[in-house]
Amino acid sequence: MTELRRLAKEESLPVYLVGGPVRDVLIGMPIRDLDFVVEGDAPGLADRLGKELGATVVRHEAFGTASLALPDGRVDLATARREVYPKPASLPQVTPASIHEDLARRDFSINALALPLFDDQPRVLDLHGGVEDIRNGLVRILHANSFVDDPTRVLRAIRYEQRLSFQMEPDTLSRLRDATGQMSLLTGDRLRHELERILEEKHPAPVLDRAAQLGALQGIHSSLTDTGAVGRLAPGQPVLVYLAALTYPLSSQEAEGMIQRLNMPGPWAEVVRHTGELKRLEPELSVDNLPPSSLTGFIERFSEQALVAVSRFSSSPLVAQRIERYLTEHRHVSPIFHGQDLLDMGIPAGPLVGQVLQELRDAKLDGKVHTEADERTWVLESLARKGQSADE
Ligand code: CTP
Image 1 (spheres, rainbow, N blue to C red):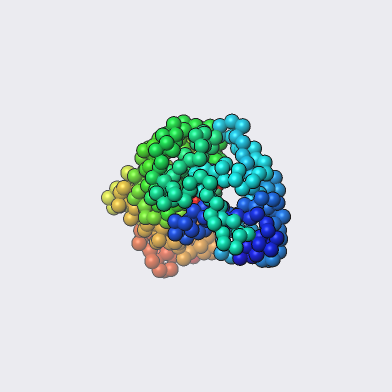
Image 2 (image 1 turned 90 degrees about the vertical axis):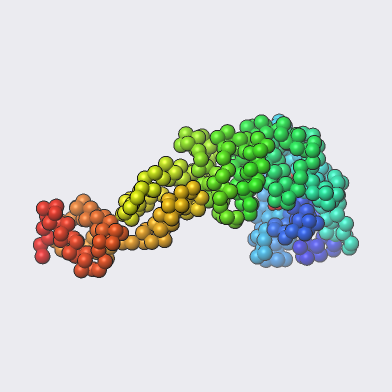
């Protein structure tokens, strides 16, 4: 920021710190990434800044933006722009414009704030009453069509309201309720991205609960209604753990529908599917005296993330405890004997080797063998039972 400020001052470049960081400084919250807007060529300015700081610059020429990855966070620079939405929920057409127009295109007054870097005594540029709304704790849209133009703002408004413990300004709230139906016009990728941002929050449960109350959770997918499992999780979990909790109540058909609608990438889809399968296995996983080998047989094919997730929010403490035990102990158990040891004992190469090894592992899991000598005896006895002999 110091370097950019020096460049801006020396050359009277119209550069502004904008949006989230200005809002967060005014609220007194820690700032994360820095967003700058320049009335002019942002990628060009980013290149010069990158050279001074020795940082790599990623340019997005078509959007007039560029970003720099610095040790203490990301810096984004954008050319000031106006946006026109050709139709509701479409991506806007953008053209270079003044900082005033750039602030006017934004989602909420609390984000439509800019701090000029080139002034000696910078004053916040606040054309939409954002400072007052921060003082009063209000989320307010800048114009009546805001949610219709961009229905992702429905979820963004709820996220800010809950994160900052603000309230929705009454007209904003009523327009938000009216616009939840427009969420169906969003592409799967955009909708998923907003869901991801909710799940990245430290406390996603209140955001999801409020979205459910306002009809916006069903805007993500019609089958989402029950957020109880998310509420059972401690704050700050990985996104996929929260995703598993959110989709835990769904039937397999509903889960498939949501996977398709949100165009989920492989790891997301896998967690959702595995979570559902695990839930349906819960009756088998809660029987009395379930041997560790059977438990392992039931669950070892599931991804670690789904297992961790279900162990954290399952409503059955026994299932949770068993999955945890599998993760910490059972999955690390393997016999001392390997395939080669069995071949060396004279067992013919073929499926029998794998079968004996599998059974030996089960025996070890269930505490029937411990030492190498136990394993040897167990193998010989198992072969005898199968009517095979080892040539020893
Ligand atoms: N913005 C917008 N409409 C959107 C998305 C973003 O007007 N649908 C604007 C807002 O002014 C926002 C800025 O673009 O402040 C940057 O977007 P983003 O990084 O999503 O917002 P932050 O406020 O930085 O969010 P967060 O605090 O969650 O990082």
